[in-house]
Amino acid sequence: MGSADREWMERDLAVLWHPCSQMKDHESLPLIPIRRGEGVWLEDFDGRRYLDAISSWWVNLFGHCHPAINAALADQLGRLEHVIFAGFSHEPGIRLAERLVDITPPGLERCFYADNGSAAVEVALKMSFHYWRNRGRPGKTRFVTLENSYHGETLGALAVGDVPLYKETYRPLLMEAVAAPSPDAYGREPGETEAGYAERRFRDMLAILERGADEICAVIVEPLVQCAGGMRMYDPLYLRLLRAACDRLGIHLIADEIAVGFGRTGTLFACEQAGISPDFLCLSKGLTGGYLPLAAVLTRPEIYAAFYDDYGTLKAFLHSHSYTGNPLACRAGLATLELFDAADVLGRNRELARCMADATERFQEHPHVAEVRQRGMILAIEMVKDKTTRESYPWQERRGLRVYRRALERGVLLRPLGNVIYFMPPYVITPEQIRLMAEVAWEGLLVAAED
Image (cartoon, rainbow, N blue to C red):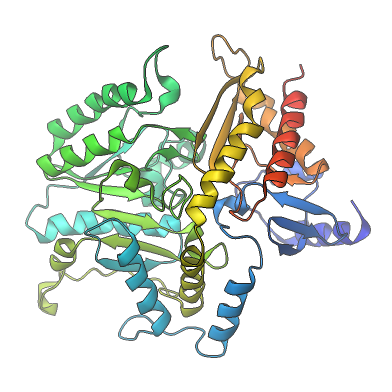
């Protein structure tokens, strides 16, 4: 570490507390201050560059400091930076909502803004609960989720998640959700198809829904990929079966596409691969191309109608954030969607996804890799202690941290989820950069697998 980086690191550690971090780690693991970004690259204060293989926590779609998004924000800065969104409105907020209604699955015609992914989930949970109350069904108060799911870290979102690392400490503060077995295809039997396993796992979900339909508000799922749970993936058939069951039993379906939306899984929205529309669609992360915090919850006209009444009925949805519908964030969102319009982004992503698959083919045969799985522009490599039995490395060994360290030495930002190495790069990455990313991950795997 050079002198400039060291100075900024020391100033940081004197005053800051970073997210999802054991700060004591930084006694031996340097914290890297970044001064600029361009495309897939981040640059520290000493001029060292890092390939952002994880899109800075999955938010960056078109690279850092994209000229078109920069120009849109510069223009918006000269017009309006913010205004209260209760009783007032503005052009970027209206236009972005119109575009989201236009591009999301059919039937989602109302857009409610929030600040971040967790807040979007909170909005969807409260809307569902409040809807049933407004419709004279106050007994519907419970939520169903999937095992190993993650929906955020505010208390409502945390309650409907199921990753113990995030949830266990705060369990006494949380409402109780019902967790159904995950359709995660990693658990299928030898010779069993992903669709077959999804159908088998759905029987457990169906039993929960049928037993508790009178008290269940909604089911919340991450469509196709359980990201923070280790990039575990499942077949679209599960979503089709779930949609049909929710319709039959009078239960809402909440699709948390915060991480998987905007092209990550190969289609603009993951729900498209199942041919379904949820009752609530939660969006954030890539919504602004990685520039500014913004989230949106899309829902159906009949849900909106349940809140539309005279003031004295007290049916209004009273949920707000100070920065709801921030014009700068909405303008960044519009500029991001315009980049999808300007080129065949999804078509190019299919080519990049094939390149990622080719570049990681050799991982399949490594004695400490149980699976290489991929859904569009998300690829994950599951490291295990024993390939035959799929016995995991003990989490205390922190094998993923070895990969992280090695990758930083080689100028690549990889941040494994436990023992899972994954790629989720910006869409502007090149085949050559993908091969570099894979080569560095291979080196990291070799280091991590050393006893």
